[in-house]
Image (cartoon, rainbow, N blue to C red):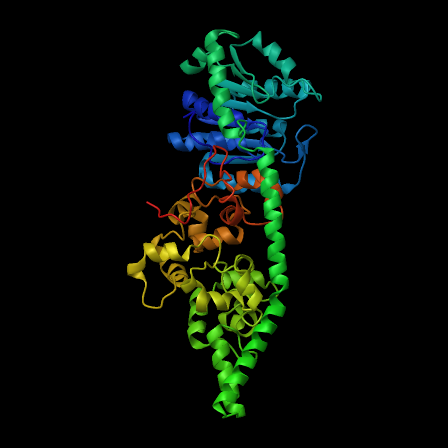
Length: 516
């Protein structure tokens, strides 16, 4: 269990103790595990994940006001809301109690708690109060785990209480990552805990255990150099340069469109002069034909041509469109409204086509002034362009060539049928895994990829077993601070720059290669 990768990594001073948390759950098989002080939830999720992996019936309870203190800092409701969103994925295993520790203690019967993790306010008086208040609630097998036992600055006083407890109970201490103390308070503690606390404070065996868990912890935290500052600065400079290029390209969009139309009119004038049949109807017909051939929307067009209209209808996501237009009542966010209002404004009918990204990575399209949605549906896929950073049109066509009808777009197939059959849009996104991990998405009827691109990343959901959304945002805070979807950032920039995709140093598979 100590070697499993943590599924969720959040900002925390507890990260390097994740491997021990997994071992502790396996060693104690607790019926009830209670945590005093949860913050972003890393330790709590480490416990919950171990419970799920082992198939235990353990009830894990997190108690916190989620308001902060002078040591952890004070924060808003976003921390609580994030923890709640992740905890929901653990079902009945995870329970959150938003209250003070002394208010919650009455919710537990005496002798009911098998494992207690104390990581609240770190003043000496608070550490003593938390321990003494919950001691009667500990079972005969009870084990208490205390964080920050080696911190001595900034008013920390847990170390003083730890020294006192070592004289009263069998204990074992880890000295890395601010220190973690293990106290066997029950007279019938599990055998594995008994062996651990009997190793002696400075024995060779104790040192070996400490070194092993310190090394395992560093593999998660990245202390071996995974977040080298020099690489980060280089990546940031490169990203800023690309951003400037993108801004310049988009700024040229209007001028480019005007130039394209002017050149088209001049070409037509030449054609007509050569044919020597200059009539208004001929000129208008030739202009319309040429513009359509170039994929440019007609200035007097009343709507998309029928083929494009059918494609737009197949891709139209009413829930997404309604979210883009909060001024509309839900029943007003119809495809007809989109055709009459959204399409002329160059809006996308679905999160699966990202106009901003499309124009950014295709500056020639931006320079020509062709709307992204129109260009992709008419030319994009045949030119091996993708509608968003995650959907790989060419890869999808190779994987499902036998399913595609002549002339059918890969994106249309995926949005209408493929996602229901569990198809992946690229090797970077696992549809079935995503829906299994987040059953609320499956219940909503959303396309898994649409959910992640819309707001799944903001809720901390992961698109792939090797991609930790929260960790990637934290590790690339300067690059993702503008709200860029972390997977989009990775596939657009991070993959080329060899960014890791989780704390264990994984690198998400290259979407240009075939998946197994």
